[in-house]
Image (cartoon, rainbow, N blue to C red; front, side, top):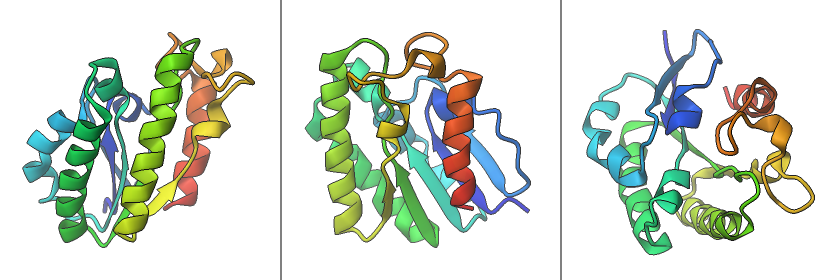
Length: 163
């Protein structure tokens, strides 16, 4: 029986991790608004834990950080009601975009504060993926945003610790 939902965007959807306890509900291109719009179906899952990571598409589609945080709060209210445990993963950096990655770090800080305020677990994995300039390490990416097999190896090592 599936016990844990992975919720997020393309990095979640394309995750090759296969595990008897995991139900992958990632959708490529999803913003926090998209996830909010499909939350009704997610909250009906008979799982007890959700691991949630989203936000890079918000930044790339030029959502304000305030708008992203508002949708995070709305999503988390419903997840909290429907899952025993809610775990938030930080957004990952992208390659060679210092300005975008500065926004990612700011949104990660905001997400961490939301998690702390609501007593959710926040796992900051951002720095596991960074080069010396705080950009995504090229060996962890296939196209500057999405993860390579080596990148998924790092991510899934952290996810498996949460099961």
